[in-house]
Image 1 (spheres, rainbow, N blue to C red):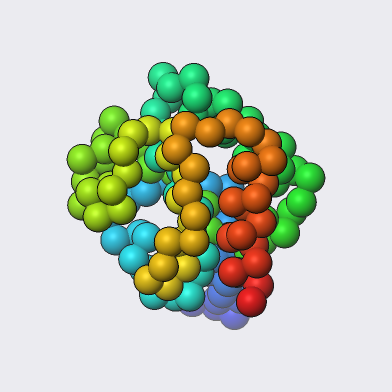
Image 2 (cartoon, rainbow, N blue to C red; image 1 turned 60 degrees about the vertical axis):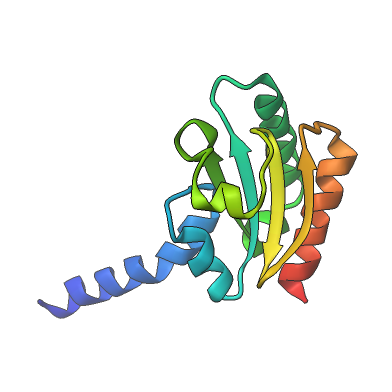
Length: 136
């Protein structure tokens, strides 16, 4: 490998964590555990593509992220597809009752959750809790 290729590859690899935070990641088994072990604050969005409440929550979350880029910079957002993972170990261990549930985790603690809520002020409060934990 020549020097130019090596430098390009090194630069690209160093951007992967930043790119992962640029938007929500799709859940895969082990992803949440790894993020928490890395000291990240995790915002889980249990959702389904056909869920109207989930769509309303997503609009609010995206609007809040647009207003305050610090959310995306500090918090790891993970979308959990309810149709695929509604009966997963993660869902069971967190006792997620239904889709349209938002949960914030840090370390081995749940910092907050919203079930089926779409209020901008409530979602902002949950995101602010996550931001405070991430920057502490």
